[in-house]
Image (cartoon, rainbow, N blue to C red):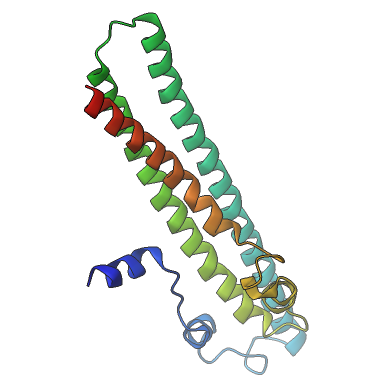
Length: 186
């Protein structure tokens, strides 16, 4: 039960591409039934593809902004505590408990937000792949992913979304270790 829960929240699950395909296309609308010539339909698909790829890129940019925010927030809290400690060395060690708990909570929020962005990006790339099936080429979904060894060969590509999620976890572990030291040394 516990391992299943861990797998569910920390593992990488995806919806089947067939489910994405059936949800993507509007029933009754295809090149034959679209208003106007078939070229107009293909132009509409291409335009929707272009917009959707741009939206996927914006999600990646927002994820970068979130990383910057949380890194700055962690740095600010840690710096404030360090400066306060340097100014008043008579502060009891227990005064560090609250700031360390705040830092750990920040790291947890950071981790889960990154996980959410990773899931959203994954879904967007699956939709992009389904859209590319109606285009003459599949540069994003098939060619690029194939060129990266489908994410299986770490010498070709190490998925950044998986790596970046460990940054807040590493910070949280360091803060947790510091918290335990503070509590034990009292």
